[in-house]
Each structure stands twice: as structure tokens, then as C-alpha cells.
Image (cartoon, rainbow, N blue to C red):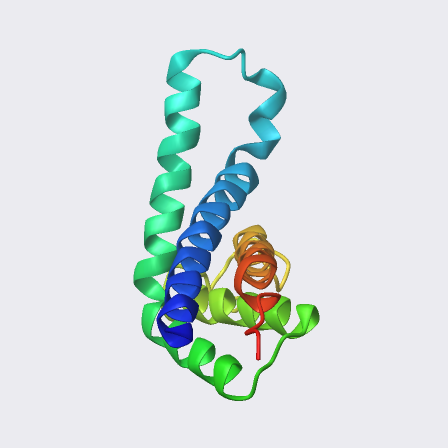
Length: 144
């Protein structure tokens, strides 16, 4: 019975962490224009639409590596905040660079910085994923 409860907690934590990642991605993408938002319904729709797309793409791209990382964390009883945050950042950065959406540093004409703003948003969203997952599932302990 404890295993079933733990699985439910993990699934709930992954869903909430994905939602938090979507919100973090939407804030990262729409943040510079935040001062111009007037509270219009269309602007809210764009924000929550971006959050939904970010959450769904995060879950779709990183599902198998996420399952592998969760199994490793549960098998070795890893409960560290820093490990969860770093694993989330690495997972989303690998997903970002593996998806082919990033531009190569050598291919660009105007020489952007080696770490683009999109990669920074992906890393920050990964840290958010790791922190939210840790708050819900990482701190939850079995009562023995």
C-alpha cells in the first residue's frame, strides 16, 4: 500500500512540476514585455497558452529520461534539494539542445553569447522543475 501511495505522490509531483515549468517558461519568454500588460483577456490567454505549451512540451520531451531519473532517485533514496535542482536543470538543458531548437555558436553571423537566452530559460525552468518536485515528492518520507 505504501508503494501505491508513493507512486501517486510522484505522479502528482511530476504534474505540478510540469505546470510550474510551463509558468516559468512563459514568464521567461514574456517577462520583458510584462510592464506592457494591461490585464487584457487576450494577454492572459497568451500567457496561459504559453504556459500550457511549455508544460506539455516539457513532459513530452523529457518523459523517458525523467522516469529514469525518478527511478534512480527512489532506488538510492536521494532527497537532496541541490541534487533535484541540478538534475532538473541538466534534464531540461539536454532536452533543449537535443530538440534541435538551439542555434550553434559557430553558425551565427552576429556572434551571440555562447549561452543563449533560450538556454538560460531552459536551465531556470529545469531548476524550477527540480525544486517543485523536491517540495512535493522529495521531502515526503515513508513512515517505517
